Image: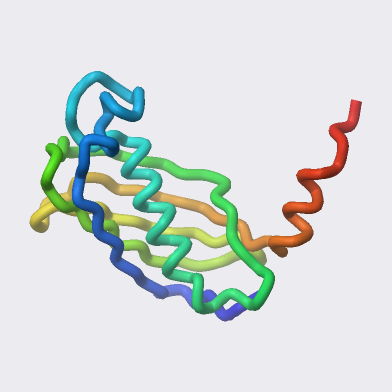
Length: 131
C-alpha cells in the first residue's frame, strides 16, 4: 500500500451546468445541482487526493457514502469540494468532503474507499457468478 497519509487534501471545483441538475439526472424535477452530481464531485476529489500516493497497479473503489445536501445551487454557479483523508484502516480509507459555494456549505460528505489491485479487481469481474 502507498503512503496515503491522513491529512492529504485536495480541492476540486465544478461549475454547475444543465447536465448536473436534479432534473437532468433524474433525482428530482428542479434545475439545481443534483445530489448525484455532488457525490461524483466528492468522489473525484477523494480519488485525486490519493492518486500520487498509490503504487503502480493499485486504485481505489468507492464503497460507502453519506451525504447531507444543505443548500440548492443554481446553474452557472461554482462549487468547491474540499476532500480530506481522515485516516486508513488497512486498505480502507475514510474521507471527509465539504462542498461550498462562496464560503457557504452546500453539502457535507463522508466517504469510504478501498484500495485494490486494479488487474486482480478486473479479473474477478470476468469470473462466472456462482449458482
